Each structure stands twice: as C-alpha cells, then as structure tokens.
Length: 132
Image (cartoon, rainbow, N blue to C red; front, side, top):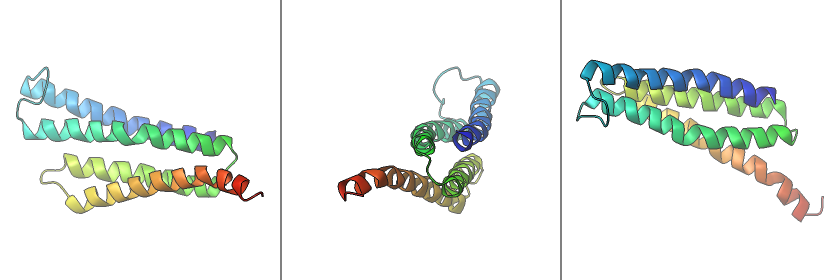
C-alpha cells in the first residue's frame, strides 16, 4: 500500500506542524487549556482539529481502494488532491488575515477527494449488482 503509506506519511508532517503551532501559541500566550479568547490560538486549534476530522476517513478509503488493487494513477491523483487541499486549508486558516480563497479551495479539494474515494469504493458493489 505504497500510495496510502506515502500519503499518510506526508500528511503526518502537516499534522505534526499543526500540533506544534498550537503548542507554541499555548506557550507564548500561557494558556494550558482552551483558547483563552486568543484569535491566533483559536485558528491554530481549528486548523489542527479540521485536519484531524477529515484526514483519517480519507486514508481509510484510500487504503481500501489500494487493497482492492484500484488504478494506481487515479489513486495518486486523488492522494495529491487530498494533500494539496489539506495544506491549502491549513495555510489559509493560520494566515492573518485569512486567505479565504485558499480555505475554500482546500475544502473543495478535500470534499472532492472524499466523494471520489467513496464512489470508487462503491463501484465494485455496483458491478456485482449488475452481474459483471
């Protein structure tokens, strides 16, 4: 599962960066829990949280496709879209002021990835139902 493993590894670096951003802001602002009403910390927490909400399901769906020997080229394109979408979203949310266009594009890529992966995973069931 080299495509899923590579994608997960790249996304792990983004995840750790986002976690360190939260930790650094907590130290700077001396806030152990919550966001203390500090806007930059709120943004960092949400960038990290949003990442954590969307990436795991994407990776599970990718792994299932790869285990089912789905077309590698198509899976690489989807993986690239996921990584790009997550990076664009994080950069946007952490920017001050926010780059709203990047945030929207990041979420569009993320949703397109999730929907594509879900549809690709349903395709074998459709073929089975059609008797192929």
